[in-house]
Length: 477
Ligand SMILES: Cc1cc2nc3c(=O)[nH]c(=O)nc-3n(C[C@H](O)[C@H](O)[C@H](O)COP(=O)(O)OP(=O)(O)OC[C@H]3O[C@@H](n4cnc5c(N)ncnc54)[C@H](O)[C@@H]3O)c2cc1C
Image (cartoon, rainbow, N blue to C red; front, top):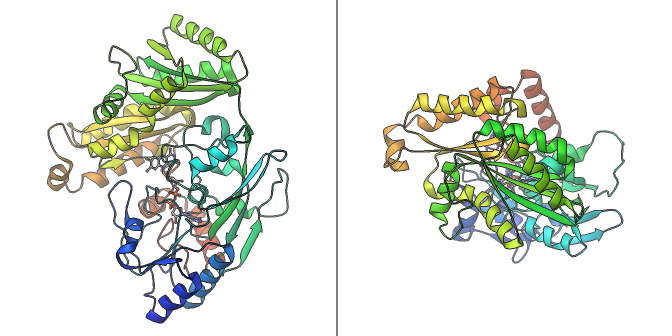
């Protein structure tokens, strides 16, 4: 695969600006915001940012770039954390931002489908669904900035995968521009459609390397009458796994979120967001944030089951939210975790998954491996127990700044990332659970994917994008 971006000639830049039209492009310092990495590790570059507002314009841009062999980076909300939307190593990229394609084209309650353009912000899709007393269940802390195009391109996960699945499970069809500029119209509301290779699923999770998603038909689900939010204290993360099993057995599908947070992590969030109330008077080593959604009477059932869990000593303490505000405050502890990690100066933020039954081993072995690298490392372990997706955020020892620590230990970032990958692999896991591969993990994928898988990935890429113009260097180096 020839990686890289060919420098666009000045006449090519002018031609692309002409295709995008007035208000349809940015250059020079106006491009600065497209170069930001949410975690501050990379700085992007580009020759031009294009802002098409119709699928036809996207197609014209791609056809031109294909003919001229100009590399394109599709861009939606810019919240990706694996540098898939950034070109840190070349100034010659042309960014195609979908931000002006932000309309909800259609809602059909009968079909349970909402058709959204790729630049629709996830939270706006939630609000639109609520107007119909429906929900679009994909949700994550970045929901106010990320867009559905990026969510699908990364097959995003988030906090309700346990019950509703990843982005992939919530998409019935896509409209996309393929690398030769042809438009794939597959905005199907159909639940059953067995007509050959499922190109929707090929594009979902392809991270902009096989085409630009311009719109999608999304699954809406009815709102549940009752939601119960519970914040729990537990002795140990392995009790979290036991509780998960018990609650699934007793309350089944109504369990929609099951989040693990360490005591260190809760303190970290409250240090950086001091207005958030403490969930308990006492400090605890481990916590769970649970959400249940279901029929009227669910609250009583949840309290009855939690009572049993106390008797079995699986719970140390628990608070059941008594109002929407209290529920929001409890969720704020979880949702502000990525931002608190950033503010504290995390130099590694892992995103790996293991089978649920291996979580206990995985957390213990990861902590051991990291302490072997440097005994003073501070570690925030948290994540989605129900998906086996536990994140480790790693910080310099107490009293040392991130900058000083990395300067003194230049190898530490790679060492930590590789140690976590190795423990994940030994526990039968995946080196990318929900964030994707991007540019950050492209080399890691080569180390951990089987040669059969790598060969198939490259064959698909070559077949659809023979000139490697779609997000060159992301996912596949
Ligand atoms: C605070 C915070 C919390 C987060 N929490 C979660 C979480 O819980 N779960 C989770 O999964 N992720 C999470 N993320 C990561 C991120 O929000 C997701 O990966 C999100 O899906 C990216 O969407 P975006 O619109 O910002 O995409 P972008 O960042 O713009 O792009 C991401 C990738 O998709 C490609 N792409 C973008 N748009 C298109 C398109 N229209 N067609 C084809 N390719 C495209 C880009 O080239 C890039 O490779 C979090 C990020 C932050 C900053």
